[in-house]
Structure formats: C-alpha cells, structure tokens
Length: 445
View 1 (cartoon, one colour):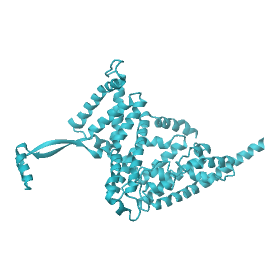
View 2 (cartoon, helix red, strand yellow; view 1 turned 45 degrees about the vertical axis):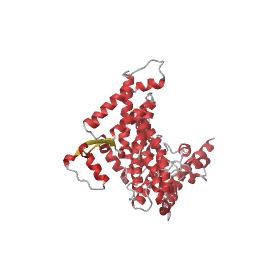
View 3 (cartoon, helix red, strand yellow; view 1 turned 135 degrees about the horizontal axis):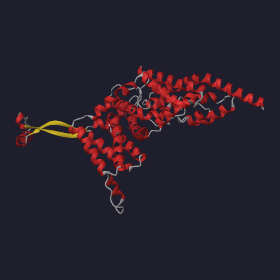
View 4 (tube, one colour; view 1 turned 30 degrees about the horizontal axis):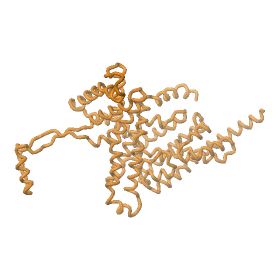
C-alpha cells in the first residue's frame, strides 16, 4: 500500500483529473440520454414477444425515426458537448466553443462525388421522351460531369465519434490560443454582449475553416479514415475477451486505490462502446446478428452488479455479520446498491486500500466479465443493444439491456450468487480480524 500510494496513485490521479479527458468524459455522458431515448423506441419496435412483430410491422418505420435521430447523430452531439465543456474549463465562451467545433466537424463530413447529368442542349429532348413515356438513350456527348457535395451521413453517427473528439479538442485549443494572444476582434463595451461574443469567434473560426478546408478538400486528406485507423487496434481489442478483462482489471484496480476507475477510463473507452452499441442497433433494425458483445451497457449491467465490483453481494453477506460495524454499513448501503450506487459500502467497510477486500473486489469483476462475455459469445443470452440508465437495478437491467431476454435476467440473479461465493471467505476473514481487534481493545482497557 505504501508503494501504491507513493508511486502509482499520484500519476493516475493527475491522469483522471486531466482537463481534456474530463471534457471528453463529460461529452460522452451528455450523449447517453440520447441513446436511452433511442433505445426505448427500439424496445417497442423489436420487443421479443410472440406475435408482436406482426402487430408492429406496419408502424416500425415510424418507431425507427427517433432511433435514427439519436444514434444517427451521436458524433455531432458529442462534438458539441465536449467542446462546450472544454470551453467552460478553459474560460472561453462555451456556447461559441461548441458552435465552432460543430461547424468544423460538419464541414469535414461533406463528401464530393462525381455524377453525370443531362447536358442543357439535350434537356428538351429528354423531357419530351419522358412526357410520352418513351425510353431515352443518351450519348456520352449529351451528358455533363459535375461535382455533387453532400453530408456523409454515416460520419455523423458512431463512426465519426473519434473525429468528433479530435475536432472538439483542437477547435477549443485554437480558440484559447487566439484569445490569449489577443488575435480577436473586440467591439466597444456598449455593444450588446451577444454581438461582441460572436465577433470574438470570428478570427479563430476563420482560421479553423481555412485550415480544415485545405486539409480535407484541397489536399484531399480523409481525416475520418486516418483517425479510425489509429484507433482500430483499441476498437478491436475491447470486443475480445482478453481486452475486456484488461479493462475490467484496470477499472477495479483504480477504484481499489481510491480513483474513480469508471470515470478515469470512460474518456478512452466510451466512444468505442458507443460505436459497438450503434452497430448493434443498426444490425437489429436490419435483422442481422448483433456483431458486438461488449457494447455500451455490457459492463454496467453484467459486471457492475449493484455497483462496480458487484458489491451488492458483499452487502448481502454482511447483513447479519457478527461485527456491528459491518452489519450497520451493509444494511445502510443495500438500498442504494439496488440502484447501482455502492459508495457507502465501498468507503464504509472500507474496500478502498484494503488488501483483504481488494482481491475479491477485482476477482468478482473479472469472473463476471469472462462468464458474461462467453455466454453472449456462445449466443446463450442476447447481446446488448438497448442503453438503460446506469441506476437501473440488477436483473431488471440485465433484462432491458438485452431487449427483453429472460435468460439474461436469470443470469443476473446467478451473477449475484457467484459474486457472493467469491466475497464470502474474504468477508469472514475480515470479520474475524475486526472481532479479534475489538476484543483485544476491550481486554486492554
């Protein structure tokens, strides 16, 4: 513990409090409600009840509109919210930061395609043929090639999340640089704030537009493809069993030494898990097998049962403990753990920096991660495709996140039992140690 506190905790604390990671984390959290709303409509459209398909089929296209409006624009909203939060932290006009970043992101999502259209001198002949319902045969000389610009819709959804993060960070940093160097247009004080603030953004916005216009369209650099290629190894790894086990270990290890592991890792992994979720949603709407096991919601529902480290199991074990302190803390914390909030037991027992409880805390997460992953990989239970609030109680959360799979709900109950078996021997050791220490204190008095 001395080594951890001296050499491991300080750098990890600095990392978890990093301004840019904090902004990314805040932005990712801000788009979660969109996925929840989209998920609700998805449940209605694909509820796994016999005969439901026939009832909903005529109206399914209507139900999928909110899904497209939320999942289909995830990157746009992520860019806006990340830039907004970073702008606030860097003491810029946050709404201007968000607007600038969103404009740049949308601009680089424009694609230019070649298309052939009817030459002006042939338009009359084509119109007459169409009016008479006759086929039209055009020669090469009667066609004109032109460029057609349009938004690349796939880049506005989950595929563009990494680009959205990059553009948000770069845009706000440029805004901050221009402000600090006073390379901005300042109007007299008697000018309304709305007007003066808009002029403050003029020079950094012009610089950003010109820079990314040159990179994307003059030089022809596909920013999306480059960013995706950089993150491809991580995107691949987190949907593998070894990769998700490493993630589970890091999250619980960070919590064990007093750092919020979920928050520290979210800035890195949230865009990836959201990509997985969006891909599963798209596969569901197209009637295809869901491609990803570890989509957004997998870790929250299937691993963090009653809170990170499945600590609801420990609360159940210690409810009737012989040690009064353990008994009181577990009973007080149990109601909150039903809603996935485990800080009372985590800091009350405590688990943090406690070698006896650190082992089962990490081990339970690893066991539940591996077993849940394998059950989904073997198609025993459904893979996640619905995002639900992280405070959704265990078992109910298992059921909802898989779109209504009763086997997932059963597995949720079994998961709690498995976690209790892991915690039990360590809880008894800690109980004996505490009772022995209390007895020694009484005898000494």
